[in-house]
Amino acid sequence: MPEMRAKVKITNIASYPTVGTPTQETLTFNFPSKDGAYPADGSDEDQQFAKFSPCGSLSLTVTNTALVGKFKVDDKFYLDFTRAD
Image (cartoon, rainbow, N blue to C red):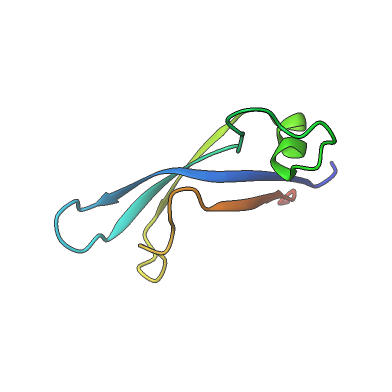
């Protein structure tokens, strides 16, 4: 199977506990899209990803205290899929 790369964007962050210092966060990712039209020449990278993976979502809970609070809504990441044997 060939490797695959997707692009994801954080659309929501839920912190727990909600009072005091968070000890974990649940990050919700969606595949990026654009409000309005993409350029006709296909030069927008989100447009290129949306062409081949037009929709999807992912939820990830982070409990590593070094990472909690480091993510922001609208941050974008590449998600690489490589087969694990």
